[in-house]
Length: 555
Image (cartoon, rainbow, N blue to C red; front, side, top):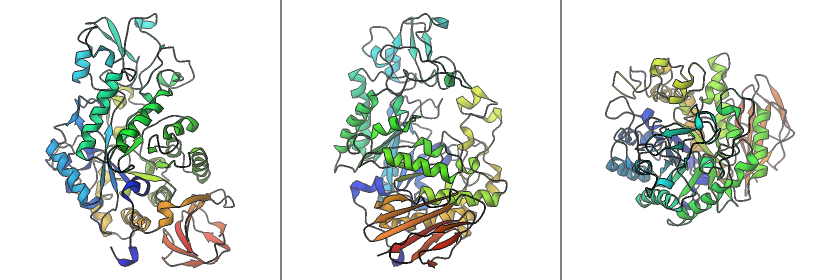
């Protein structure tokens, strides 16, 4: 790294506070054995792309791998049949050990996707549980006698994936509960043996040296002990026609979060291992409780209200203000805009022409990577990969298949990574990739963007490395500039004698901004529109349409 870009030194216990995470959907990242499906060896091949220690690489600090455990792949890894085995689709345990070692050589942390709410119906635990009513593992899952509801079901609970959430088991004459697919029976966290077994699975990977876990559907893991009916509301699907007050969002998972935090903190120095929770709760006042006091709950929680905003300075500004106001003093915000469950944000924020769409992508990138907190990037986001409309015959997502032609499927955001303009996009040489490759890979791919200094990839790359050099971005507090015009989102990040100002213009027209007086001029150190070194004294300046600029003032 050039001396002008000297990185700020980071303590091992604060890497998850100061680093940038990159989510890999393993099926779609890189196919090393050319069977059409991504794998662990493919990820190993691309580690230098992610971070080789120099500014030639993207510069991320941690990888979140969507599930790689053994699975029948009905829900592509979120239906786990063995928590301590690697699915052969992705490779072997030896491949994972190599990936972990090679990543750590590059100071890249590895975070695994752990699914605590349910298993596959092919998991040995469930096979035992359903074998008889008196099996020792019977209470490891949720079983109920027939009730008075339609189909003699125990209550009115619905599955996210469609249909009732209760499945009849002829062998034992009871229903089992599944909040997601029939093939994903929910485990019973009220059973202490099940709880210990889940913690043992986590310990297996912590003993191997993984750096943490993303906890899938964590707010779902407890259900009402009385199994009361959910109240009704207006919605599009049967699941949406209920207020889910009894089948999720109960307070008990907060206690499990504390126990899990104690487990990961017991490995090495406190803070070296971490937890990030998928806590998808509409009310942020409830979601923030999973942090505990910021030191005894989950290290990080995804903030879904932020990611679901439309392209609006005002909405993002108010989302950030709300979350900052709710977090405990030691709580760390966690922001993302795209992931494997939702359409890519470049499509959601798209304009009528590609140039404006990419301009918006730069605005949101600068926002995501400069707010106080821990940012998560979704694979391909750095090159502006688009959502792809997939024909019904090519769909793999069980949600998309069930509700087709409603636009609720997830495959559109899971297409293979676009490495180059070859027929397999550099992802595979197979004629049958697991999902169709977006035809726009001819224009949108890593190889082409690496060569173009003005590309979106190089915007992300330069910004990620610039971020590492500014203590105010890594450790500073946040002050929103309330005097900015409504179409601007502007804020200060301050640490010791350094203040960084971020100015983001979400509009297609010029806006004026009065720069705050911090005792010295503001110098543009990164910008979509200005030259590096552009200096502005406090006063009124013009912000260009779709401008995203990082300014620094030092006292």
